[in-house]
Image (cartoon, rainbow, N blue to C red; front, side, top):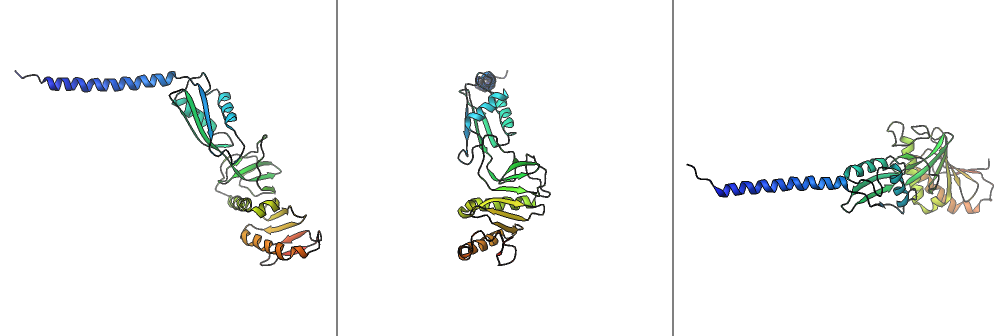
Length: 261
């Protein structure tokens, strides 16, 4: 008769007990998370100083109005996922992270979209961020960026919200580069009041200093053209008769052509 190894029996029972405890703890924690109630919502806007489209309080209001979460409501991972997906559909919000903590707090962190340019056409208006994402203006907040008007050759008709389509986006992406260049330059940011364009992408600039229009033409080599205009402003413009010339044309090589018509 084979002798029973009590060591192996005890070891088997011990391992089984540990496994049963792990399963119990997992199920118990899962039940607790399903029964957890939201005590508060904590919102962090990571780039709060870059724009003013949303605040922590408005995000809390959006969440509570959605009825997906709020004080006294059930809180778990599934709820947090639904909140994240809901917030990502909002025009001014991106890169959302949402998760519950064991103390009943729903934590939400996000970024707001930061415009590079605002476009106004006969069919509508929108902001474009650095990635070319289009979103509508806010009724409560106006972001100070270069303004583009006219028959802007966009790959879509306004109003529009969403990412930039690849097809037909060449001019729009050049325009974003140009607007970003202006915004980062202290002088041009102060001087250029408005950007006008036609359906072919020819650019005219309305300047703040005077009533002149600057004809930039196509956006190719715009850095060179603006440098040429800067030289003109420094060396020639002070000696011109004020208000005599109505436009300065930068389209012709190294020249700046001034016209009085």
